[in-house]
Amino acid sequence: MRFTCCIVVLLLSVPFLGSGQNTKDIPGVWTVQEVKMYQSADFPKSATESLQNMKPAFESFRFSFSSDGACEIYSIFPEMQLKKGYWEIKKDYITIYNLQANNKEGVFMGLWVDTDQKGVISFIIDETPLILAVAKTPIPIK
Image (cartoon, rainbow, N blue to C red):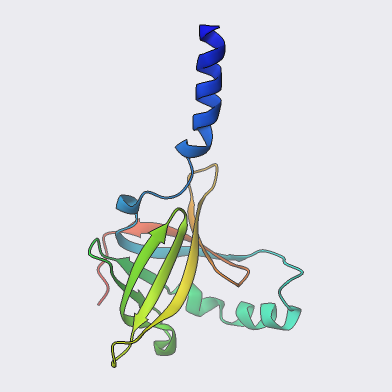
């Protein structure tokens, strides 16, 4: 009976052990190591081709997440940069907000955070087939 109770408790706790990212793990500078795309019937082929052409822009991304909620995104393309934003995480989803000059907020980007079996962390850009394999770096955004 005691053994059965231990097994039940263990099985019930497994979904909570690896689910979601710890908010304390996210702050820092994340540099894109590799850009991949998954196949999706929901995403038009022409849009996938356009994203494929923009691959160098995504390869240049650096995400800076501060523990106080501030956020910046660097890219070699200025129109894809975010100089003044903030972020929040709920489970394994990061919402990045753009703070505009008139202090109105808008969602800039949503990222699903995933860790594969090898421990590689990826940011999956919401509503796209883009998967950005990232690594935390000590490089500050300039």
